[in-house]
Length: 102
Image 1: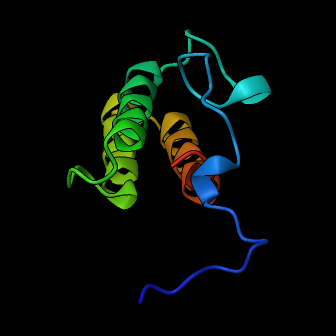
Image 2 (image 1 turned 180 degrees about the vertical axis):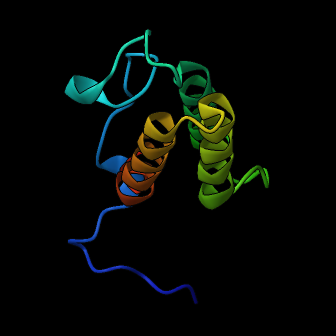
């Protein structure tokens, strides 16, 4: 018998709708298409979308997707201290809030 959650606990992914703004950030917190990390953000969004459409196909875990996101941003930052700090900030926010969209 599988354990059940209390009635007041929702699956986390049900809390926020998909963001229709492609790019970095979510909703009003989107940074726009001019963000230097937009290519890493778009790939990250694609991976989250793949999980939503096919959650049982053994794709990537959320941690793997988020780590790939950080690696992509650090590659783009190429040692620039400001961009490196920004990459870790995006990554931290993704780890904290990304579960709402996973």
